[in-house]
Length: 246
Ligand SMILES: NC(=O)c1ccc[n+]([C@@H]2O[C@H](COP(=O)([O-])OP(=O)(O)OC[C@H]3O[C@@H](n4cnc5c(N)ncnc54)[C@H](O)[C@@H]3O)[C@@H](O)[C@H]2O)c1
Image 1: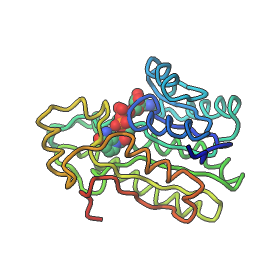
Image 2: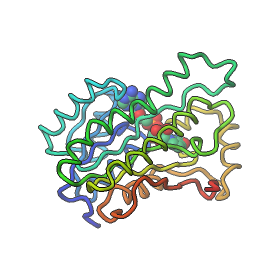
Image 3: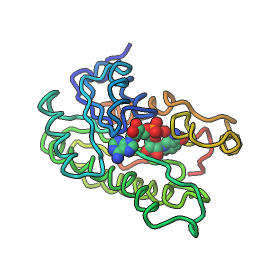
């Protein structure tokens, strides 16, 4: 087994479930020291055992001061953070814009976009000062294509892509890379919430004819946050089974 992450400290937001948990497990297996940040205290305890994470911190990533506290507590326990993966996110209600309330719109955008901004903002000064960092944000194919009924989700993920491209350029000269991934439908709690008919419809949009498993997405993210990914920043990595056109 490769030891790509030996000596590295990684924070995974939304790390108690799905894609975040898969990334955490893989980084820990490959020698990294992992902190899971998540809203769900119960799931965090289980995920720590499952993933081999060294530390868990219950935090709402939309709450700026609590994110700052989470970082301070993580650094105190594990040392400086080298890797940040922002996987906390929700799909939110799927309905046409005429039926979507402003509050529903804000809830999705606040978590998916503001939560990503706050998580990145917390770790960037230290990474920049030390001259090394790897940040992977988690967008979605919905942010490239737009998905009918998913205006808030699609817009928030397009925002994540724009934020990532910007940070990639801002930090390019400081040894800190910032990249994003745009997964297609992936088998996690998020997809378990939708009807079997919707899952079938999702599959029909994927040239490979199936949805991804979380491990397939984490393989790409782990490359994105490894030292090997040294000359790529502000980039959008596809993981859509052949669906994406760009
Ligand atoms: N599953 C898919 O089909 C799919 C496809 C493309 C992109 N994504 C993206 O991947 C990311 C992970 O999704 P997943 O499928 O693993 O879902 P998931 O529901 O399994 O995991 C999301 C995690 O985020 C946590 N979370 C929610 N609100 C939070 C908050 N305010 N603060 C901290 N943690 C919070 C949840 O407790 C949960 O553990 C999301 O950003 C999602 O948009 C998922």
